[in-house]
Image (tube, rainbow, N blue to C red; front, side, top):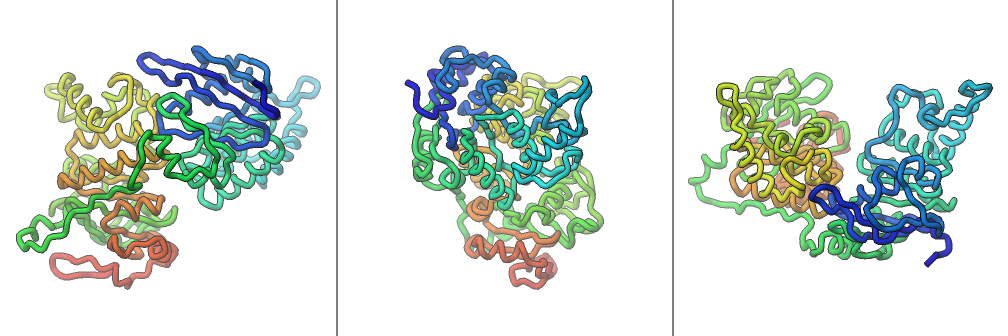
Length: 523
């Protein structure tokens, strides 16, 4: 049945890969001038669906209609002719070309057989103005930040006269101000009659921007609801169960037993850590069974401190001790040998070998210890990898599956899993749930609980303030490369954290004192 103003409709779409049913009888439709949110856990099938709409995949069965007419989308050119443009999380831009060259790549206007650069740059300037981007068309793309790259991608889509714009996690790495600017542009496009498929894991964005929501679970469309549907109901549709507590931290019970004093000694002790121009006088402790969160604005120095503690980056002064043992500076092997593991914020670039298998990635840290006389204990590695993958609930076709084909949440489980195999005592988590859905987040939180319950220590960095507050036993707040304050869980509120985060690292805050073996000092 043809609905007035319907731009796109799919019926009964099915897509399988070896050993995996990615989509099964999925229905979806998009109308002119609406924002239709596509919601689901990582691995639910959202990416497969948009890749079929963009021509990257072909469905095994089902039908696709564009403005009431049945069509076949077998290539990117087919999608382009139908007015469908897709903006992926990983931008499809060439860094060494100009903005104008990227916008019209492969479609440059010509005059007398030559590229008409004047017209190309003039047309690009008009498109950039439409998306509110005040940059010169001759600017090299490599000079732009994430938010501007995204606007260039949108300008590129508009140059195709796109009637359907698919946006995959467009706000994942944007600041709040950049998000508002993007939302303003999306609303303007909606008012112009563009139909927008919007994929997000941020539930609060749905009511702010969306009109309708289609929920995908385990490869099936399980419901279509209004955008103002309560978040609890959206979560129930996504994961098939209600999540009673969004941040299920199980904090260790306090004890007054004097015999626990030795056990309460810090597992990780950082004293006076400094790197010129980056961070200064960083002092804190993390005990076994404890989650210490690090909050702060972007650029406060949180990641730099974590990498220095792990030995990945150098520091000029200060000390790092693990269970009373001093670690040498800038020595990753020494840190790993002492039991420190780092889950980096860029899991794809720094935490995984994307073209390797799940099994190979899980065994990266333990490969050296599993090697004898130049021979790797392959069977032992396979057994251990299977055990950890099962423990973490990694959704995969098998241990041999290429890790780049996993969803973001499952990739993150693999990054964490390699450190579990290494029997890591101190796990540093840098943005552990960025870009993963609410169901996978709760699974990561439960894993954190299991780690601390078994005596591990966790140092967690997150830009998601509710996450820091919900999962930390103590919160360190960084500002301008210093620890501006320390708050116990019962005192850590959003207002208190933000007040410290925007401060000039007040050095004499009462929460800044850290007791040392021979007295105490202020940060």
